[in-house]
Image 1 (tube, rainbow, N blue to C red):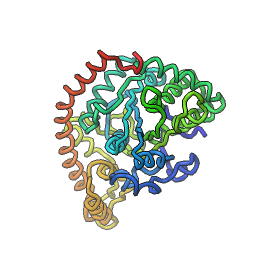
Image 2 (cartoon, rainbow, N blue to C red; image 1 turned 60 degrees about the horizontal axis):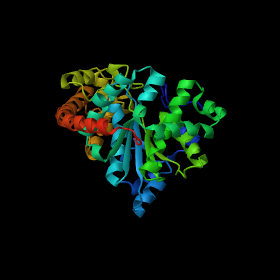
Image 3 (cartoon, rainbow, N blue to C red; image 1 turned 120 degrees about the horizontal axis):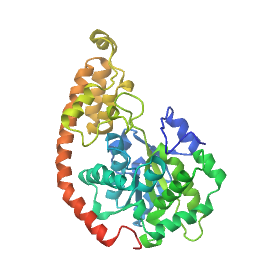
Length: 371
């Protein structure tokens, strides 16, 4: 069961097969109970596990939560937006939002110093999150390294409810750094259900498929733990946005992504250099049309830059028919990207004093729940 490594490079060739193998249900089975959402409509969010528990709680008017985390190991780019979009959707539905900075995991598995992880989390993630509409005042934001004694103790207690064989079967190895990181993640995922946070409640964790091993073992821990009657966490799954050159989008390769802090001119250069599905000549392209499945520029439009489905369908028809050339498609992307980035950069400026004031207050009162 070790095909998916939450600490390594993951590329999924067949999402359907992966869903079947790990017991993931299609999001379509509950889509009519969700708010209208672009990612769901377009199949970018494709799967779910036990999401009915969260939706039932919402319908009853009972408390429910959404939990997400961020790995402070690089810049925040368009490939990260799907998680934030889902977290905001659930927060707007009434969910209590928990946002964790995985600085201990970054230190243990990626050799990133804690102070560097903290700086990255604020500059590259928290500022962008608030600029994109996250309600920070309604969010339990914390660093793993400052989560509080009760939280960290629980992560150690959870070790009693996972066997070494289960751990190795899920992750491939029980290396000390991975073991410590995983146990901490189980406490993170279950944090919204801790006694100090109102106790057990349905909780959804939006993740890429690479993080599913953590979700699965957390569900096992939740069902076995006797001191608290945890509700097994639900989850949603989204497709990976591919890199601008095709293949995996990687934070270690700036040519594979557009960061939300990139300048407009830099972002446009990356679009110009991106892989397309255009043919080798204009004549061939006019005759056969573009190959949309191989076009990274269209993927960027479909994931984030074109909000109207009818407009996206028109662009697709024209490109696949050959009426639209790759250069024309790139011009559309550059135009939309410029509008997005200019607005976002202004929103980041407005978000900075809010974030600084929030962090100053939290530093004075303590990030931990029991400090």
